[in-house]
Amino acid sequence: MDTAILSGLDASKALYKSLEDRINYLKDKNITPGLAAVLVGNNPASEIYVRNKTKKFDSLGLKTNLFRLDENVSEKELLSLIQDLNSNNDFHGILLQLPLPKHVNSENVLNAIDPTKDVDGFHPENAGLLSIGKPRFIPCTPKGIIYILKHFNIDLNGKHVVVIGRSNIVGRPISILTSLKKIGNATVTLCHSGTKDLKFFSKQADILIAALGSPEFVDASYIKEGACLVDVGINRVERNGKSKIVGDIDQESVLGKASSLTPVPKGVGPMTIAMLVENTVLSAELLLN
Ligand code: NDP
Image (cartoon, rainbow, N blue to C red; front, side, top):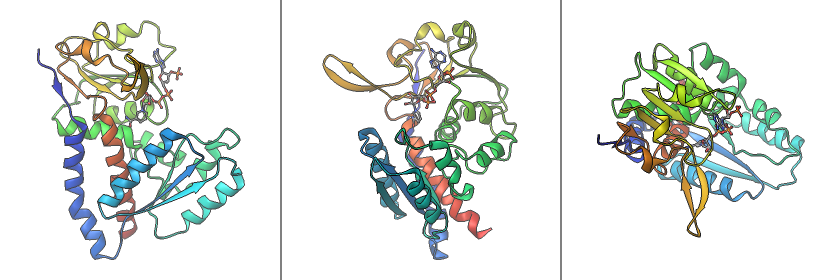
């Protein structure tokens, strides 16, 4: 069987194209969607993530400002910056790049973000809206997974989706989204480290979403013939003395057995950034309603 590669670059290009009219409409109304990105400390991975995100906003003519804070910033100072950004009308979205330094309680800071500017969709109010089937801001990675599947006409309706991983940013929200009648209408199984006999479940998946953070963990023995595979993992590993990024799926091993597969890199990753842009545009649009 040929395994189709579901390119996140192609899907994200389609999304950016569809945003052009929405952005122009807002600009005609003198609204430029704006993102405030908050980066604490000098974590090299966080630096790259934030740079990639703000670069994309710049390239689309959207407003973006990076607020850099020292590693030793106090929680009080960080909360005060969030309050300022909450009331700053130039910014429709606030991105708090995680992880934060250990002395700061991340939950306190995330919960201080105005839920109407929470374009990452991590605030309990937005998580609650999603879980009752009335999503406002959907976390970017799960939202991007739904987009890429729809883009490549992969129908979820009535299918069995198996998710490996139950984090609040990927696994749990994608399990909710795929189960919602209006979005996926799939039958969903959510697996995690407490799952006994993971293969028993993963081999039943029509669509398997791997978000466990373990390099190349899922190989051909975990899947059934013809499954669609979504690889969310971003893991840096050393191979032959070189550093490289691999997913949670052993991509080589599943080629020929899976019907389709999101690659790593250039699969789910670009969709996550695209959905941050989409959520920020959406936030600006909500002001008009
Ligand atoms: P977390 O570490 O927060 O969660 C991992 C989940 O996987 C947990 O629920 C854990 O179970 C479960 N798990 C871990 N090992 C196993 C196992 N052997 N069998 C079954 N379940 C297991 O990770 P994230 O959700 O934040 O990220 C997952 C991966 O996705 C990472 O590689 C991350 O880098 C990547 N990622 C990629 C993004 C993108 O844009 N492409 C965005 C965000 C993340 P338990 O709850 O019991 O601990």
